[in-house]
Image (cartoon, rainbow, N blue to C red; front, side, top):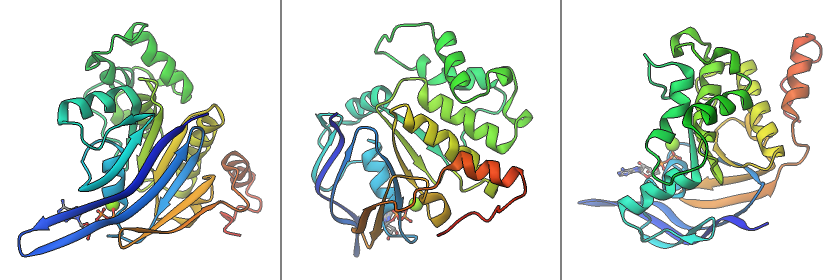
Length: 252
Ligand code: ADP
Ligand code: MG
C-alpha cells in the first residue's frame, strides 16, 4: 500500500513582528496506509501546528508535503478545502457538534458541503457511519441527550462519512474520563484494523500506547519515532475494567 503522508524538511515560522517563533523546525515524516500514529510532546512543541498543516488547514513556511499522492504545500485555500473534504476526517477534543441538530444530521453535514458527487444518498451514508460507531439507535438524539463518549462517537461518524484516506484527531480524549477514553480508543483500533489510517495527538502516555507508533515532538523537531512496544488492546482493557479485575490502566 502507498504512503498517506510524505513530509520533507517542513518548517513553520510565525512572524510576530519583533519576534519569530519556529513552531516547526524541520520535520521529516512518512506515514503509510493503515498506520495508527500517536503524536506526543509538551505544550508548545508544535503538535497542533503540525496537525493543522497535515490537515490542510494551514500552509508550511517551507518544505514539501504530499497527502495521499498529491503535493499540497503550495495549494490555495479553495484547493485545500477541496482536499480536506475529499481525503480527511477530523475529530476534536470538544466534539464540535451542532447543538440543536440530531446525531444523524450532524453526521450528514459534511456531505451537504460536498461537491465531489460521491455516490449514495447523504442520509443513507450518514446512517451507515452511525452504525459503524455503534450508534444507529441514537440517530434522532440531540447532542445534549448523549453522553460525552457518545458525542465523540457521533463526531467520529461525521469524520468517517466522507470516506477519508486519513483520520486526524487532536486530543480526542481530552474531555473524557478514563473509561470513556479507552472506549474511543477501542473504536479507533477497530477502524484501524479495518484499514483506516489514523493520526492522533495526545499528551497521555496511557492513550498513546494504543497506537502502533509514537512520534514525539520537542521544540518543533521529531525527537522520537518508534513502534509501540507492547501495544495496548483497548477492548481487552475495557473488559478488565468491567469485571473490576486488574483494572490498572497498564503503563508497562
Ligand atoms: P502544541 O500544540 O504542541 O502545544 P503549537 O503547535 O500550538 O504547540 O505551538 C508551537 C509553537 O508555535 C508555540 O511556541 C506557540 O506559541 C507558537 N504558535 C502556535 N500558533 C501560533 C500563531 N498562530 N501565532 C504565533 N505563534 C504561534
Ligand atoms: Mg496543541
